[in-house]
Length: 563
View 1 (tube, rainbow, N blue to C red):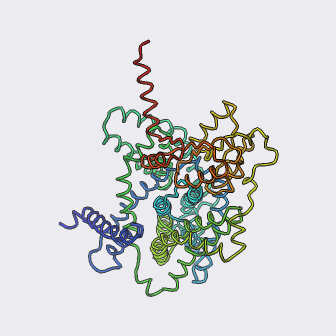
View 2 (view 1 turned 135 degrees about the vertical axis):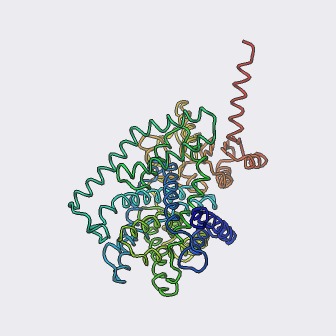
View 3 (view 1 turned 120 degrees about the horizontal axis):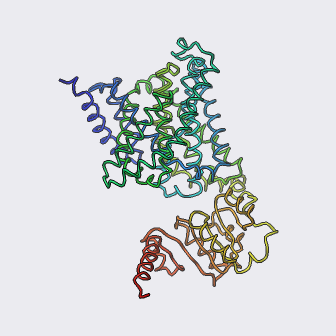
């Protein structure tokens, strides 16, 4: 009867071992993803004991890929990307090119073909968004400027990798894959047809899907049934991915990505993400388990130097390239180190790329094992690299005058131009942060003819503000130099509109030192933090939910007041 319950056995074994090893990994301060891969290795044919059904595990992993890519699309924000485009776009392209060339060079040294080396290098060039987000969240820097740059960089990598996934099947012929014998049409024709099919699919999604999916979610939500809403979200993700593959020869990954991207346009996008998260997480676990099943542990003993070379490219080659690129784009040393640590690992996209390469006959199974070994080791040591950023930076600053220059480098947007009118520099408001809240405050100040200077970490935002005639300086306002450049000594009020309140005390300390009579206004969305700030009598503190409740209560009382 065993053959009748192979699916149940595979799922039970996969989830059970993933839970055990994921828990152990987390207790060891290592991402749970490492535990899931180890569970897959134990269930695979390369290790003794129970061997799960590889065919069924492979199909389950395809669902995992769909839901993973759906989640990426659901959280993809073109606005977030555009806010850091000047570093993320060139940075990701150049860094991926360098990493790919390093991988190709290593593969060539081993005697691999051009096609094998290209796919191998590409798989080493793209970092894991899942690992990065977890690392940034655990350190509370996801919403910081450095965090946004790192995420934007990886978004560009994801988009480039999606393009590679689209082009790999038609290019399999020229890259020496198994499909080379069955393709008779000219290469340009095959690629043109593929790109045309992708363009038709994307157009349909943007024109039809952008209207149809929100309309469908709206009507399902009106039923009040939570399970129907969850079912509609999952059905849309998998259905569109399958339809894209069947009708347009587009990969499951690309179909699911655009399903999520289009669904993001709906007002129910947050709920869709929340409701689909448990199922996405579950199948993502099965995806990583199935990837682990392809790993051959013997490669660690038989080819330790090859594994070491792969890890060196991932951890050192990519990091050094990213750091040099970031510094070349005139960003400080701290940003360069954060980006470098963020990219010093590989994950889900590398597995998807390598898996497609193996299935097309382009990448040898040995390459898949080396990629998996590199992923396991790089993900395991990634938290250590993040923890080393601060001590390494301090060591570099103490050792090298060049490092000190790079950290305190001249930024054309870090100083107010001499042409700034005097009215902005006397009794002005210094507004720290130009996000959603900051923009609203700035508009009210402009409409009320109240002079103000913006202090914002994003240089591109500062550049755009200056083009509009708004005085602004770039930099971290917790650094005294930034507030000095905003002429805090002449200001009447400091408004801190950033969501992160970690450095509020540093800003207030600098402001009070230079202008003892200055008024302080602080935004916070944490109840405990707002309580502590009020107890310290730091200034006027606004807590988001509290202000919302006050506004609603005021409206209710006004409606019931006698006319």
